[in-house]
Image (tube, rainbow, N blue to C red):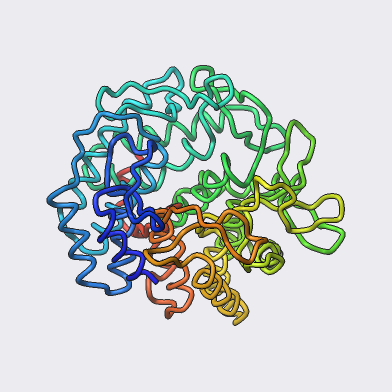
Length: 449
């Protein structure tokens, strides 16, 4: 599947950001500020890990010869960080090839002006040419988004370590300071924060989109520090406790889910993006005290099971973008606008963690169901495409092979069927785009002090 996805991208879209597999051309999009080759950079480590050596060399050659960082467009700070910087860092740590390190550092420098705000909380959009930054037009009252400014930590610590320049680590440690200072409603972290005042802008809380990877980066920051970053661990433990107290619910049919919170009122829906949380909670459970460990492993298994149900209850056996628990419907999308599947990885990500931490064979079984569903519904003549409605057996394709399909979905599926020592969880943490970064057994202190 990876070879097929890559070969078609290379044939029809090399150097563009993504492949459009139905029309057999490339897509550039407007998230990456004029940067190109998102699929190349996202695929590097997957190609390497799968030992697709020839394909990896093709990708590396593109990065060396054609990857231009002198661009002048409006980029998502978050997307450039997780896909490009994450992908380049992982490729460097896996191979030791200097080209990946130097490109990562050069790109990191271009993101720094986004932090020039009264609080040091970065704005979400940056011009890679001028360094001007601003907030997303749709984000309420010029706010920054929790998942976006909370998903820089892993990469930026590595940028400081590799460059010897403490500025990257300082920027992300300052974000923590702001978050620790601000009052959390019921211990929860809302999704919108003003980069000017450092206060929350509205009380919407979600473990899915807008919030998701902030929580993941807390537990992973602790793991990456070789368990020295106790502040991150405490923030994670406290946040998870508040989530469990206020957002975790059980449906009439016995399914455990994480609702969204709007100023104290619960919205009984879960996004596909929130399905990463089964894996996250399991990863954290490994390191909870003995009496809590089983409790969290059970919670992780229940959430992962609910996400599996969102797949099992659809006609294509692929899950919708969001699913609800109201009016007698459970784990299904009730709105037309939520029925699509864009090759997302979060459910198989949780299967991979659950398999590695429990070795219950059902997780491999569930992963294999996804493989078959992808082959049946998403494989087209020239690549893989998302589909517009998971409840229709003759799928309508959206003509987009997302770069994260190669970075995440296929990597997590592959790791699910590998031996545990392939990218062992003891030695690597995955950034939120599934790019592996090494657990730092020695130098961590230098980059934080």
